[in-house]
Length: 376
Image 1 (tube, one colour):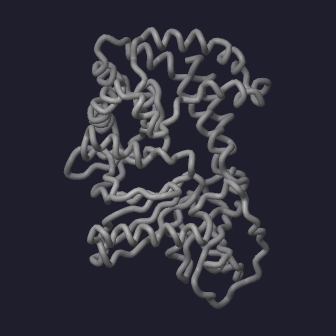
Image 2 (cartoon, rainbow, N blue to C red; image 1 turned 90 degrees about the vertical axis):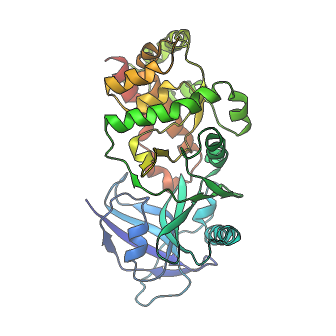
Image 3 (cartoon, rainbow, N blue to C red; image 1 turned 90 degrees about the horizontal axis):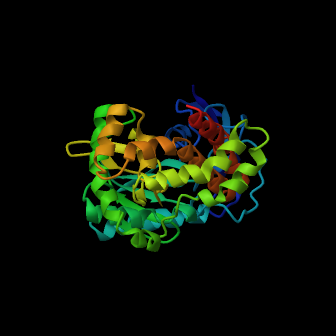
């Protein structure tokens, strides 16, 4: 599956210049823009999604707004409404992305990493990401900018690094409007990781979660949210009639959560999106990236996201002596899906309308998955 791209170009002041002819890129995922930038035929920075010809990614014909400092030849007319929106991400605005790249370049210069080149990798409602390559072409740092609802991420990274150095990317600098500059982590993203890697991840993360079980106040001071289950009745209300079994699952939730509490696992720092694709491995141990979804909650949320492998789950449970961790994980299977629905609803409530296709289907999908898990 590929993706057809149209770029509507604007200059740094926001004046629309026109539209580039459509072109095709191999990566179907709408938020991934490195190949879009490479194939544009002129120097561009992708600012934001305008629309797609299908209700959700991947693939299809996708139109973005992009910024350029010079008007290329061959532009067609552009039909676009560039009216502002109060929920627009700072990095989705020409002046915002210019300020972010300037901030990152200055921070790199101050620590002696000069002569770097920024290469845009991703932009969507959850993050804007640029890789900075050194004069030799090798990556040295990453600029990540997140929306206000993920503003706790750099603080979480620093807090985890103090407990377990190297487990997370090192924060070189953190700035306003969700900006963070992260040291490059050599290695590979491990989307292909199996049970052996999952076991390694569980064992590496456990000391951090044991530490923060006694430091929940510190997490709150960093702005780390709770699991948000108190918002579930309002979020689920529009879907109660259309999802068979959902009303009964919600009615039973207090009993289920009481049984979870009786299992004895403490609330602690939860990564929130712990899958092997958010892990890099190289010469050392695993490095866990992308902590924007971090929350205060039951550590079983992470094992349920990471793996269904019974052997790995048993290893994880054995790290919590005195607790019935296996029982807690089983009870929380549907709750983890409900919590995901809450998270996606939070995204939808805090992003501008053109970004909604990324998450529009996720809330009902997660609610259905919760009912299915409860029936297992």
